[in-house]
Structure formats: C-alpha cells, structure tokens
Image 1 (cartoon, one colour):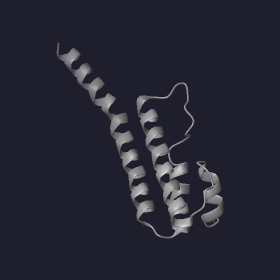
Image 2 (cartoon, rainbow, N blue to C red; image 1 turned 180 degrees about the vertical axis):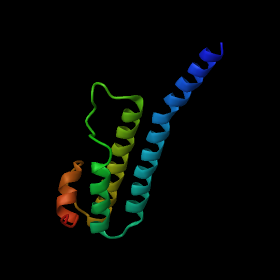
Image 3 (tube, one colour; image 1 turned 90 degrees about the vertical axis):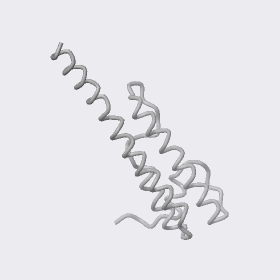
Image 4 (cartoon, rainbow, N blue to C red; image 1 turned 60 degrees about the horizontal axis):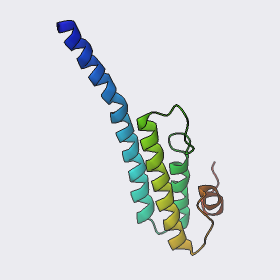
Length: 111
C-alpha cells in the first residue's frame, strides 16, 4: 500500500511540473503584453513584439502538442494580437495580423 501511495504521489507531483512551467511561461508573455501596452514608442513596442513572437516555439498547432503547449500557444497568439493592436494605435498603420511586417517596419535591426 505504501508503494502504491508513493507511486501515486510521485505521479501527481510530476504531473504538476509541466503546468507550473507553462504558468511561468504564460506569466512572462503577460508581462511582455503589459510592457508593450504601456509604451508610447512604436520601436519599443515592436521590439517587444519580436520577443513575444519568438517566445516558446511555433504558433502553428502541432499534432502531438500537450495541453500546456496548446495553452501557451493560445496565450502567445493573444499577446501578439494585443501588441499589434497597440502598434496600430501608435502608428495609424495597418500592416495586417502577421507580426513580421510590424517587426520589420518598426523594430530596430538586431545586432
């Protein structure tokens, strides 16, 4: 019985690790959003957009995605969308929903 309890406890504990990691990553994305929305400089917002767009893998769904991966993908899509909306407000331009044109137009070149 003790072995069963220990095994169940370990399984439950290890099962929470991906959730905790996903929560931390989602929090970083939320911080990127807050930073971008508080900026008044399009270049700074576009730089944050670059970081959010690259953060944690692809936006395209993958067949073997975990629940945590799907959650992070959805959070990242929402953050990128909100940052692009902020760039529209600041610039008065419409470059579409793809972050790449916004980054190319407003973010300083990487060094």
